Length: 404
View 1 (cartoon, one colour):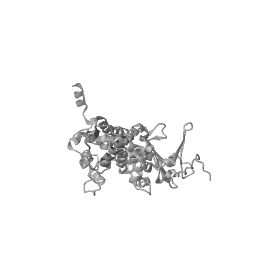
View 2 (cartoon, rainbow, N blue to C red):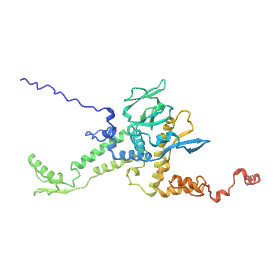
View 3 (cartoon, rainbow, N blue to C red):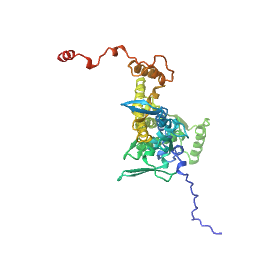
View 4 (cartoon, one colour):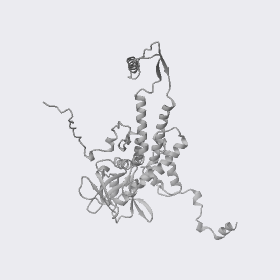
């Protein structure tokens, strides 16, 4: 029998899962042994995980409905068929999970998709969530023709029937993820985490070094190293035996090692900037105070969440209603963000009541309380009732004030 020593063995073919069976959730659990970074592993970084969940959770829990615009005034109109679709968009998941998933897609993939199902009259009946990997965007810059293709359906999908959420984009059609913009920062963060893991795992953080005041053979060095590692790095916590010419010198982490910890804190701040968050919200409380926390919360509502809320409202308003229903808009109620802060919520309703903006029963209705007798009357503080409109002020008073 002859053997060919130089013949290469055939490698078994790798089984490739269909693209719809893979996602950034499963890929993000893989560990890259090399010191390189891929966007698939972004959710392994704690700061990214916290930022993505904080933004998506905060918006997904908010009430969403339909409002009708009459003479410039917006009034709730939850009798519209679209209101039911917005509250229960996809039968396979809850409202919270649906909006959470599309927001995560926007941040991690740059694009989020939901297919609109309609009845014979053109009314939306369902929003089917689609993973970004299963949708192809076809755009012709010359003719400005745009359509989508879903890998499980052969036909083209017109833009009016596809909810397409984009936060960052260069051409208005293809979205760019936060992960893409922050690739360098996240790659450095991943390398720092690997370095920290190797630093402590390899025993480089020991509290001392062993000195030998004589020359040793290679065999003696190996024996001493093996004995020391067995006692201190194997988790046994035993005692090492020192001979007369050996000396143990305690040391602490030097300045170079301290820079490793400072770098990890800096990366949290850098990641927070990409997501538009304060480092305080990602767990970095090193420079926080009461005034900082209050300002951080206000900034989080106005500068971080509001752009995502506007993105959802405008895209759903453009696509979910029929062309003849121009007076209806989708509205996300941001008041849900202050419901947990009872003091802020109380002051908010007091101001609306005292200034005649809302009645007592309207406030009670939003709070889930029954109506009370006389609660439909509008009230206002006396100091505002005594003020007169500028048109009712006599001309001679205005002239006197002008001359003075």
